[in-house]
Image (cartoon, rainbow, N blue to C red; front, side, top):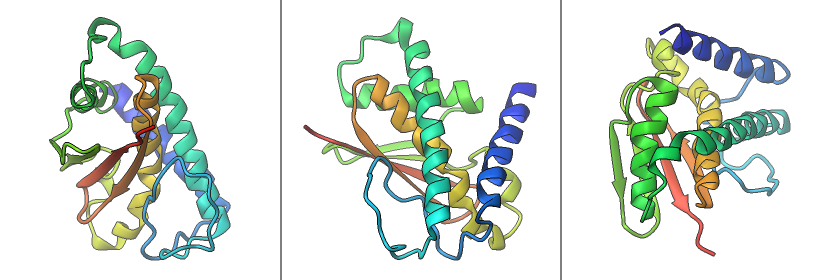
Length: 180
């Protein structure tokens, strides 16, 4: 259990350090699509350039960690026949390895879009005491979006991962498989 506490502390410090350069994320900031190199003028959320950069750095860190996890975890279960099997692996094994619990729900439209739900996401539990923290939540999800995308990448699936929070500490991760 000490490992979980250390990971939470490290994650919180990474977010705090990156956000110290631009401490005000503004209302309505959401963790948008990952993996796109486009630049915008702030979009709907009105993010500043520094905030976008911070989210990008966090997502990139998560991507690299996800790649390493993808290389180490599936050694005994490399017989994935379908995308759905890979997503089930993410929800059960990868989530348990990182957060000591399984994902609560996995839904799909069978056309390459998957929604992963965690009703008590460990990195948001400490923030769940009030609605004032709801707009701060997306910056705590960028690393995890990268983690999911990196693991999928290592397993041969190119994807976009976005996160949303409607009520703390629950969150949803939407995985859209990129067909080539």
